[in-house]
Length: 191
Image 1 (cartoon, rainbow, N blue to C red):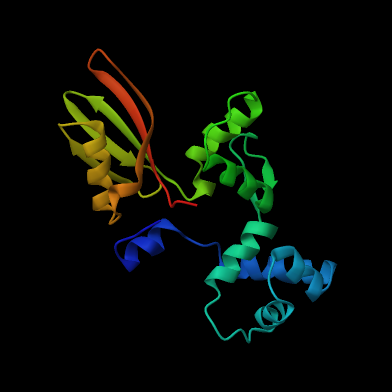
Image 2 (tube, rainbow, N blue to C red):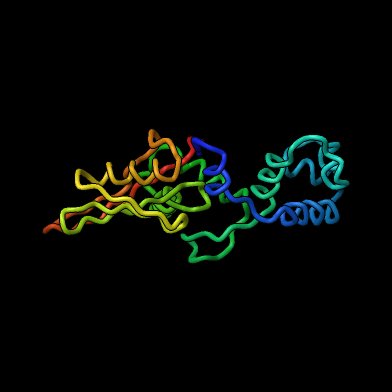
């Protein structure tokens, strides 16, 4: 995501506890070898060795995400909360970044779910219309914003309130009738 300030970055992309990724890496190295763990996560053996010994000289954020992406498991909303391996989730997310499938109902289900999945790094903004006012909300950030012009303007106002640049905002569903309505917008980093 493209936060406008450091505070928004810390709020929008929380990493699991620092011990979680290191525990996963240690377990993988114990099950295989340091070389095997390095091959599996796609980095150099020396980097894994330094990470495990606590002597890695640079920031570990990229390594943490790489380990969590490959070795971590995630709860998949499509599978009713069952866990899925991180690399499998990543494959679905990469497919979701492309054009929607047209001939496979399972692939369509994954594509739709991945659009608004919290594992995708997406910020989901729900907008409801009632009493001539559009109210945008985000459950994770517990933030709201309102607007009387349009659902999109309410979503843009909420993103600005959360210190994000609204240029990557996208509407994924919309329904309105008889003075009531709901809209779903997503904001996510381009893969």
